[in-house]
Image (tube, rainbow, N blue to C red; front, top):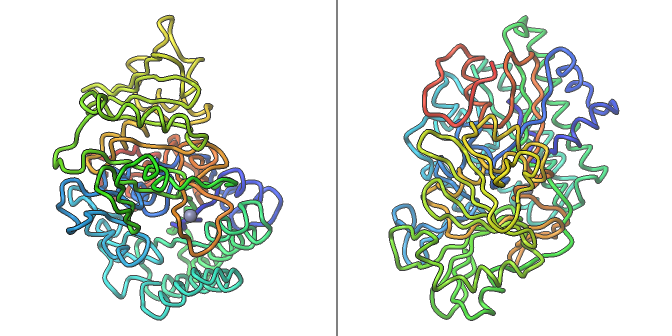
Amino acid sequence: MLVADGARADSLFAAMDAGHLPSLARLRAEGSAHTVTSVFPTVTGPAYTPFLMGLHPGRAGVPGIRWWDRARTATRWPWYARSYVGIEALRADTDLTTDHRTLFEYSDRPLGAFTPHGRGLKPDQRIGADLAFGVRMGWTHFRGDLPAWLRLDRELGVRVAERIRRDRPDVAFLAHPGIDKLSHQLGHEAPAVLDAMRTVDLTAARIREDAERAGRWEETEIWVVSDHGHSRVTHHEDLAGVLATWGLGVIAHPWIFTGGRDAAVMVSGNAMAHIYLELGRRERPWWPALRGKWQWLVEHLLARESVDLLMLPRAPGEVEVHGRGRGMALVTRDASGRYGYRTETGDPLGLRAALDASGAVAGFTAGESYDATIGTDHPDSLVQIIALADAPRSGEMLLSAARDWDYRAKYEPIPHVSAHGALHREHMLVPLVMSRPATGVPRRTVDVLPSALRAMGRAVPSGLDGVAFR
Ligand SMILES: [Zn+2]
């Protein structure tokens, strides 16, 4: 499984159509290619839990690349905040739920390379985690040295192909970070991004040639997926700073604003944010109880151009969704797992075509919810919003940024002209290319793990968020 980190479905398929990625095009011709939805938040790390566990990120225990630990069980005094940007990336595995296994834990002989989650990999089954390589990666990141990034990305592919040839793992999982890194700095349409796509193509070609030469291609499958898309950013909203100017004491790991602890702002990707309120409480507060004290904050945020969607969890399975300038609707999931949507003061998710006479949809399965939303600006919105809002580690306010905006923090090592994290199409729609045809219909990245288990001849456990397409 090759993760073309940050590849948008339309960009990758266009490059294949234009003849730039011959190995991927050949996989598609012999197998299949699909556009599927990623998960909200569309950010590296959390958006890998579908491939590795078959779970939405919130259920896997990682609701964002940064989150605040209300329960105070995973983090420490004084801030109780988690950020996987930097050294705390080492905590990404211990934060995962132990209720479900990872792809590596389902395997007898796994191999993993440059994966943000590696639970189940022994040290010698992990590539790219060794110190020298890590330090070089770090330097390259902070210097913003793009040719070096491309070289490292290629080297990663060469090393993985060598190890597959030598060790014959039953599953190999490789993330190629180049497309994402270059897109952030140069824009997703930049020519250098095409070079990073070629790296993925070269790795697939190398693995295939080796397997053919060894007579193992018939028993080998290559799947290429992505965790999120990308889109242009022209405006940055320093969300933590904005809340501070409204008189709130803000925790925004790793930057702490002085003056009390009223709210924690945890940005992902950077076009998504969790805002946590009532930080002294260990139990999660829900919106009906917060309204009196915090309604002003809802109105202030909805007045910001940076906001596309503001989501307020009202109870398990019940979320108030505000679209800036588009009114409010209620998204629900009942005890039998059926989804609903009721327009209250507007139709923020644009489901007009599916609404009944009373302005609602009711009793939708996850599949029907997908079909009703896939053509909208927020693909798979009903399922994705409930999945994140229900996560115990999520905030009291969930923000998805408007186009051209992100919630970039005050300080970033390199400039960003492109971002991801939000629930809109450019971030949510990702490619899936497989060397064999799907027998079912691939819809979501959470479907990848159960399907991979089938392809490996293993039983699919119950309780996963995805459905096998094999
Ligand atoms: Zn990124």
